[in-house]
Image 1: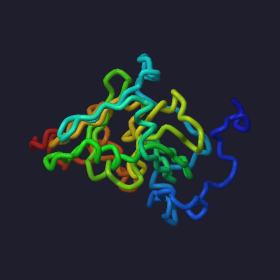
Image 2 (image 1 turned 45 degrees about the vertical axis):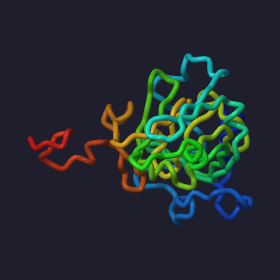
Image 3 (image 1 turned 90 degrees about the vertical axis):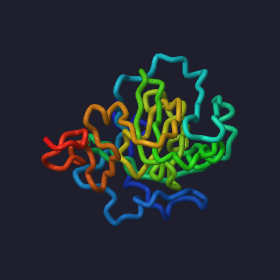
Length: 232
């Protein structure tokens, strides 16, 4: 497809926070003087990357489960999910493969809204996001998941999120690398101890801050120590 035929191609310079309507949540990284993290470069496209391709499950029957260290386990169908209060977020999007797409507007349900309905227990410190794609998962600190700019989105730049980009609903955690924003999300699990997800088990960083270039798990291991924390 030629760029001018791609509805997601950005022909102009990226939007800025001051261009957003009142009520839109502004991701703090979009206010930086330099919005592209170290080692990244801007793309005007929206590339498609994932571990397995779109899931084979029938996503017309999509459901979201919130479980683990919660007071009230929650299961939501897509109509139930879309009936919840919505939020719009303006953010940038940074892939660990070194491209950044600036100036995105996401619409969906905030992670705070969802977890408030489930009731987070005090022992919960981490979140495991599960996807419909072959048991895929990713882990992140609860504090990162509950930032004001985090949501589960079903619209991107005013249009439904397509299957290839993680629709009907995908996670969005703008302040971390994009693999932490689970495509085809099926579940949110609250846990006490961190547990590596799919890419993290393959060597990706356990947190993934793009501004600190936390790309790989080896970045967290001090010299002279193995992956389990023991000296060798």
